[in-house]
Image (cartoon, rainbow, N blue to C red):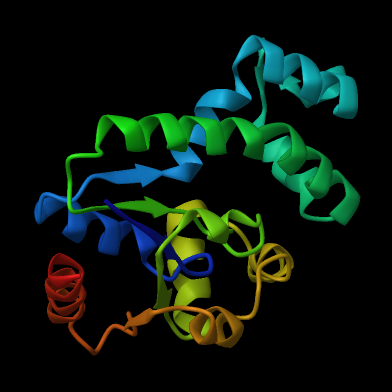
Length: 193
């Protein structure tokens, strides 16, 4: 089984690309969903409270908006959160892979694939690439963040060109070039591997 990492910066359209692969019958692990689930696991919540204090809670759950406001203004805080969450996500992914080991290939979608050091888990990497202005527009519409908030968060991700250079394939999602033919070509190549 080939393990494929699917990445791209915020607003690039990774989720759309992942859903196309799913339609093709490819199992897709969404790292962000795994991280969200673990964030409210009692052991993880305890570790987060220990590091960030009770004020990070909304009721009994970690307030993701408060957490984002903290970690995207403080690199040390972001690193601390990643050190708490990423080992659990990695473990979850490895278990998930065992459940799908009869497939020709699987995909993990993760925005911070390179930044988190997860790349050694993968045989191939796909980066979804979009112009920054379009990414900002998508995030504003999706999350209601301001341009400054978006740019602050983007600053914690690798430059898009650096991700492209480190990838086996790049899917251009610029709103003009169709993505489905690009996905189908990658799918064809992976099935022939």
